[in-house]
Image (cartoon, rainbow, N blue to C red; front, side, top):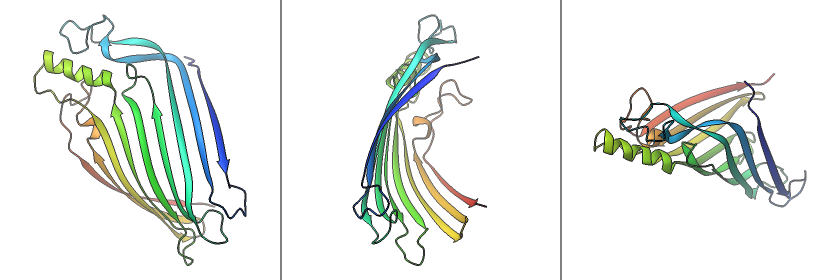
Length: 216
């Protein structure tokens, strides 16, 4: 099956030429469109809520999907006589229709420290936070489950993320990157109604990980 999609992007950058002593930055703005079929987040194919006893059990299919996004990146400090070492900040936002997307709004932002030590010019450290909003359509489905299934059915709201990562270069071409993530309201705070554990409240979670990279 062939599914068509299209996307576009505009980008503007400043002070990004090699050797430019000023603080570099860039702004990107884009959008996309997909011409496939997507499942409605609330209604069944017979136009009633998926939570209703009379539901067909099959989501209503909607034609096409669209979305937009923006990215902002800016150096706030540059190490003397370098191009990319210093401190930078970033922010990103994206959105999509609530009726056919579980996440209708996503935002994240963070700060990165690159090569601040002259002894370790290739090391990087960053911290960031992210916010994913569960679409109003999916939240309304949870309300329907409260009405049709049980009154204490949990309502999904958002998923949050706090993360920190450090990239340590052992030698040229070989780096190790430990990271820590703290997830607030995994899955929006509850398991999806159509999942393996429907309506189960999910607790916050902490994740530790490590990745190593070799370049030849």
